[in-house]
Image 1 (cartoon, one colour):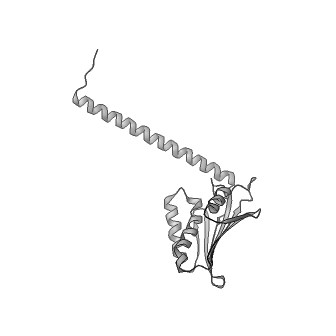
Image 2 (cartoon, rainbow, N blue to C red):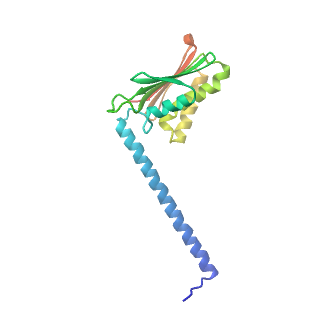
Image 3 (cartoon, rainbow, N blue to C red):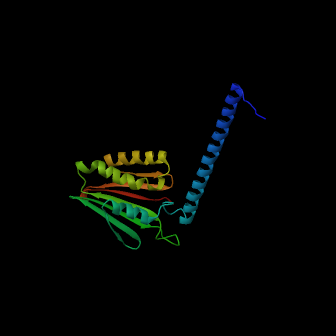
Length: 187
């Protein structure tokens, strides 16, 4: 037995198939978001809300070393430095000490640019921004908010901001000609 669809029957069949595919796609997306949220939530719980969730300190150290930094493990924190002429880019990545395996996660970042000049202004903003966005790397709107605040502070004298659960402080130190960003979990 052969069933022949009319032209209008084929059109409604296509619409039904497209509608079912759209629903399946949306459900898959919601499921993926739920899984990603669970993973992020588990990482945050594991750190006791004292660290950058889902990001091991070794991953950040490797990324910095890949960009030319020399890094040293100081037990409680990793210290990394990059020199370009007279300008120094420094970062200290503090380990979360309230966690059983505190070697794995970052609880605080101190990033400094020493002797910045007009040619390193854009690089300095990018450098500070890279660290500032780490806790919010999966949230574009918060990253944009952090970047806007940071650009304002680098152009000005610095200030303190609280963005979600994080405290950001940017300070200009005239006596050492440096800019320092401190980023830590707010308790």
